[in-house]
Every structure is written in structure tokens, then in C-alpha cells.
Image (cartoon, rainbow, N blue to C red):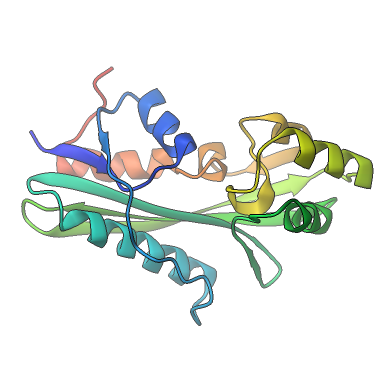
Length: 192
């Protein structure tokens, strides 16, 4: 039986994969993300997920590597990880009262036969109208500097959102429903 390798150190992705019942190991990719490539958001998400999976695939034989990249898109702007409180507040101010897309690209590489499978999942996220005080409190309370779009729907961030159209786990960074279809094709099933 091939082992599943998650090419990410994301706690959220690890949790979603565990909640779905999969057994896996974690080997974070060393692939250098370049968010400034001249590609559409869906092309970029796929490109980055493939780069991550390819990097980790070189280290694992007889394995299935899962590489994922996710970000929010508002208008024509990609919203990755804010890294600073100031940038997080700017992102949330922009998203306040608006709808944006959350896009995840994923790539599965079966290193036994070198077959790969890729896909992109998009969910629509509708934000409530937020005051500057609410935004400041949120950024000061929840650690969002290393999450795309500067919010976590599995935490206090759920209070910022009025509705999600599409897979909610995608907004957490792992569109497990879509990925599970491909894992089943490869022969990897949840152990629950």
C-alpha cells in the first residue's frame, strides 16, 4: 500500500485530512512560491501546487504526494498571507461587505507510476460589513499572519462571514471532497 505524503506544514490542511480519516505523513515542500507570475489565479494555484508536489516527490518512492496552494482573490488582486498586522487589516478592510473567491489548486503525484492528477476548486465567500474596531479586534485576537486572506473560517473568522457558496473546507485550504475522488482512483481510501 502506497503512503500518502502531505507536502505542507499547514495545520489546517493536516486537520482536514485527519478529519476525513486519511493516514499520511507530513513532508513540507521547499518549493519557492512566486505569487507574481503572469498567470490567471486558477493557473497560478495549479502551477504552485505542482511545484510543491514535484519537490516532495523527489524524496519519496512508492508514495502519493499531495501538493496544495490556496489564496483569496478579490477583484484582480491575489490575497496570500499578510505577514504583518497592518497588511492583515488592509485585506480585511477590503473584504468587508464584499464577496471574494477562495481558490485552491491541488496536485497528486503517484511516484510508483509517475502519474499525476490536478484540479482547482473555487468557493465564494461573502463577508459581513465590518467596522474598523471589529477588524482591529480580530487581527489582535486571532493569529492570521500566515493564512491566505488574513482570516480563518475554523476560528473566530467565521463571525466575519455571512455565507460561503461551495466547499467550506476549501476556504480552510484543502478541498477534500474533490481531492478524495482522485485519492480513491489511485487506491487511497480513508481508514474510518
